[in-house]
Image (cartoon, rainbow, N blue to C red):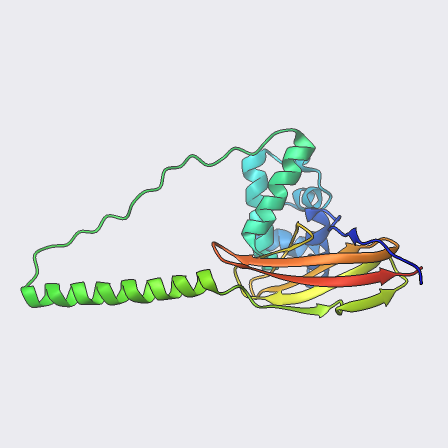
Length: 223
């Protein structure tokens, strides 16, 4: 029996490639996206082709990408993370970190009768308890992940496979450490490149400040 060595598989296409593919799957021509976002087709072409140096500065570029992601209904956070990494590599300029201070919300409470004050304190206490219960549930329960394709054990001749699945909204998904675009409903779809032999794909889903769910797929490529 032949022995195969496991190889780690990654997502190799760029942010522009993925946005282009999602736009075509949604049946949206480029001029329709331009009309919805107010971004010229020239700049949309530059985003899809990864020509970030052709965009009018980092602030405008990030705003363009954010609007594009909103039209395609994909998570803004993941898109901007991918854009920042590719922009820094392509332009040799690291995106600046936000230095805007957090502004606390000011509450103005006037004089109220004793009964009304007690009712308000009780209501606030109930709200805090409910909030803590919801937060504790999110912290202790990892997200549910469903992988429709590929199956757990698969033997194919092609050197590429489509990853299709779904998870909970507001969940970050990676395939072998590379980000995967997730729409607002939690659906995701990516094309992964494979190598000859046994390929291992690690799909990791995690919510903010929560535990992670990891799903493994082994694919044997026999050209």
